[in-house]
Every structure is written in C-alpha cells, then in structure tokens.
Length: 245
Image (cartoon, rainbow, N blue to C red; front, side, top):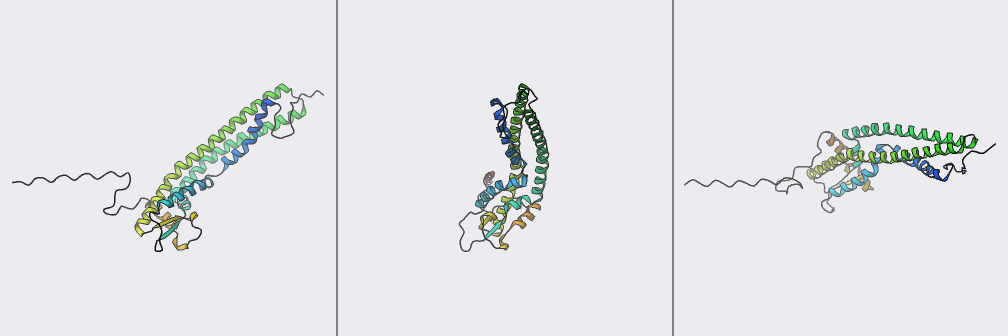
C-alpha cells in the first residue's frame, strides 16, 4: 500500500511538515491559557487585594507606633468581598466570565476533536498527503486564533475585575480612616501583615456593618484642620461695609 500519510514524529504535539510544526506550539500552549482563563474571579482577586491592602495599611499609619499606641487589625479582602456590594460584584463577575468560558471551552474541544481525526487519517494512510496538509494548516490557523482570543479574554477579565473592585477598596479604606479618626487609632494593619493579634483588635466585622449601613466616607476634619487634598479652597470673606458718618 502506498504511504500517503504526512511525515509525523511520535510526539503528540507534532504536525505533518515543517510548515505546520508551529501549530503544535499553539496546541501545546492553549491548555495553560485555558487554565488561566478558567480561574474563578474570587480566587483571582487575592493577589490584587493583598497588594492594595498593604498600601491601605500604610495610609492608616500617620505616625510611628509607640508603647501607648492604639492599634487595630482588619481583613481588607474579606471587608471588600463580604459587603453587600462586594457580593453583588462577585455574582456579576461570575455570570459574565462563566458564560464566556463555556464558549471558549466549546471551541477548544472542537479543535481537539479535529486534531484527533487528522491523526487517525494520517495513521491510516488513505487520505492524500496534500489534502491532509491543507487541513492541518487550517487547524493551525484556528488554534492560533483561539490562543489569541484566550489572551484577550484574560486581559478583559482582569480589567473588569479592577474596574468593579477598586471603588469598593477605596470606600473600605475611607471607612477605616473614619474609624481611626473617631476612635483614636494610631495604626490599622491589614490582617495579612500581622502574624499575631488579639481577637478583640480585629475590626473586619464592624467595617462590613458600617459599609452596609452607608458609613463609607472619611470623617469630617477637625475644626482648624487643613482642607483635604483636592478640596476647593474656602471663599474669601467679604470686606466690612464702611461705617456711616
């Protein structure tokens, strides 16, 4: 029987000729992108929240701690995600990205099935070599397009998460500044930065309750304090009218 099958190495991620070998790179590279795209929003938020929380802790430490300093601890990540607004954001992200992930999974399964079919036809040796070559080239192009789509999807997912969660973080930090001003805390640490603390020092549950009740702004500045950054300057006082003679 004449061997019309394209030349193929024994490796699973190989194609019949040098012009198609890059398809294997796309095929081998696709699963990591899929794994990255498949992660759920709540899990992906962890690195972002940890970095932001540490920055927030620095904002809440205006002076070095002393022996008499009043210190508290808060889990910024939980304070964000377990507020009513945070729970709604998580549900929105899950609905948005789960539907998109189903679409990508369907396309990837179709590509895997097509590759298996090409492998079997190449092994059988009944399909002309040039016909197989053209089909492998089509498969290669589709695999590369799917890979690019997955990268774009991952970027869009990160952008949307940041767009929806950053305002919540800013409100939580403002709320903590309010607590610090009202109750005299010298330092509020993020829980991740405190290897040990007494349970009564944690403000997380209280912060969530305050957030849900609408207490998310900074405390009003004390009388005589300089205006907050970005605040409009006070209007100059009008000169007194001259006394009548």
